[in-house]
Image 1 (cartoon, rainbow, N blue to C red):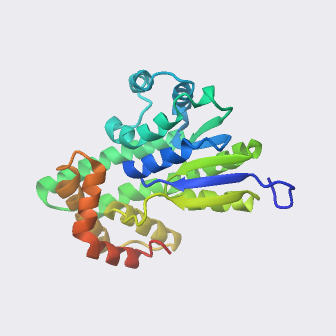
Image 2 (tube, one colour; image 1 turned 180 degrees about the vertical axis):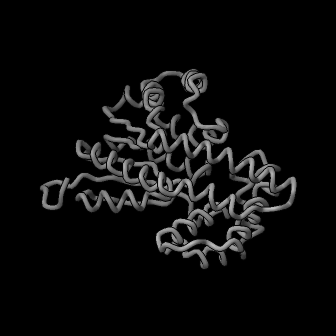
Length: 276
């Protein structure tokens, strides 16, 4: 779909922060409007068959249990399902009503790498809580190992969406904060793109800020200081220990954290250039 074509297909991109269920519920409301012919979901492609089964009307619990048995849902399963369920339930039975194409676009190999890295991060956090010491170099090495695969996966995923959108007139795409990159690529290909953030304002967690800082440093050919890494890791450990582990509901934990840390978050966002 290039510039100059007589018709420009539309793609609505909905940005849903990771793990935030209230944002996923808002995305589900958009999906339920049923005014689209193609759906792009930020789930691993390994899940596409199961997602289609739910869209055809299969019982949600049965499909999820089957996906668990096949070990296709990323660990921890509860955290994934927490924000995935509203999206999946919004699509349940939709193929009985509409002729809709459904695509899961996440690169499966990178999804697996992300899951393994998350497990290592959890172990590092546990160790930090136990010995009250942060090994900045270990954190740098671990998180840096994600950057190149992340860049390759984003390009591959964006290529996938661009290719599949060619047969669409009105598409809707659920994305994380890579939604802006996806939108830019689609616009370059001639698509009519709208980008909607479903949780505003969203304050990035310390780990998300650290990942952004590492990406920016790598792009400049620079290296992030041990001091900055240590500071952000310390804040993230406090976020996990003081809020996530003592609240059953992630959204509640996140809101309490934002309320308590608002001044630091505003400072960290300015220093990181988030939102620019």
